[in-house]
Length: 183
Length: 307
Image (spheres, each protein chain N blue to C red):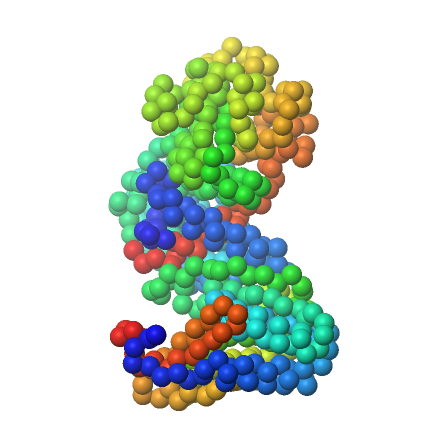
């Protein structure tokens, strides 16, 4: 268990949010004929997978699902940290599809910006939407907003950060921690 | 990667984990090259000079395409049309190019060690695209990548390098790279084309191609480099082909499938016959295709590390 933190979302709460996401998405995208879920590497994959299972159980058929790495589209290559890519697995053209990008936490918005470019390299989608479990407010560096979010966290004037721990069997806990360095 | 790359001067001196990182990242680039849009803006603020002091088609085009796919700005330079002909030294030539704010240099040079010399004297990242008979690291990496793609892993695989080992930078880089990744290496050719102390590198030596082919999982056929041979190393091309050339008859005598590779350019009918080069055993064109992904990977990883 991390030090100096509080639980932002427990398992039951996360399950409720997943159910809500699934219902909201089905309401908007119905049979998912023209819609695909794309999890963002590395930390959006678990959520995207859980969401895919939830939706498929509700509509009774399989949906298009992909995993996307945006490393090659980052805007900070050569500016410090070394970034190594994880695999992308998108075995369908994104042409004329509604793409729902799924990530665990939205903070500065830079990952999502590069993810949009990465999606575009697989085709020209009809529409791209963004779904995140935790929306960290007020520290955005780009004009990006989620279409669906689980909870809101105020990020002003803090060193707080959010950690999402996925266990096996889709068990998850979301932590709000005081300081990354002190963990 | 345990140790970040500063330059890519040769395979010697690299760690296994560094090679694995290059190959893993190349897998991602290989996927990207299959996507409808094959370009990324990752190196958009990087300028790369391609300095070719020796003829090259495949390597130069492959590097150029890799750089363009990564969004870098590039300058192409070949010695035949430059002031090198007027007597300018290597450092002067390169420093003049670097004063135009170049971040990386890809260099091919006829002198062994030219890239090492350059890396000690100028402030840019250097990638060796072949230095004389010394090393050709990106060729070895793309060869390893191509074998891994076909066979899954290099661990325990048996690779024979056939032909002109003495004049081949590809052979030396391949030996280092394959051994680091856990493969066994044999060199095969006439005694005059096998360097004297090559056994010190831990490779097997054979002068009989049929035995070598029976032993191996992969055969890498090297080109007979007539341009580097200032004396005669074998009586005639015809005799070389008879003793060491790979043709379909020789291949069909084996009771197993092996992969056939060649770094190019091919002397058709000399070290390899056309029916073998164009057969399903051969992965020669996949090697060329993989060359772009592997070079993108090297450029991408080097560009991330500030010297």
